[in-house]
Length: 148
Image (cartoon, rainbow, N blue to C red):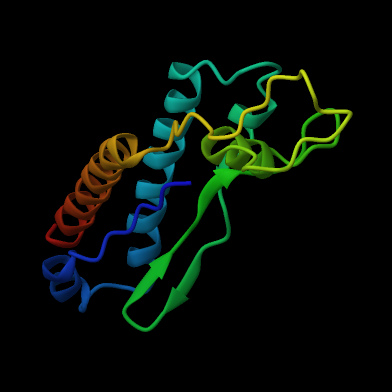
């Protein structure tokens, strides 16, 4: 899957030094919410919806914090009604099954060997733009709150 990583937020980091500890988490979670909606939109746009379990399972994971930053992973979580991991389904749809040798059982069946790359660089760039915009908007709200 595509990975959205934003490290060019040094200007924000300088302005955030005087703010409280939960501020970074607010900004990261605002970006995660925007990325969640963008990922759901990509799943719908590429028609990867059968039961809707994978799309509805897209959520932000647990927030992790370290000195000077924080992060959260956004991916399909949970299992479908058939007990298949939503993250595994998204990975196979995006990347494919790979080149496995043919067996007697699999002959004649059409298999997704290459994937359709619905989380390609093009969609990752769009997701990154949406995420950065949401994080900047939250940052501006925080600065406005603290300047009152």
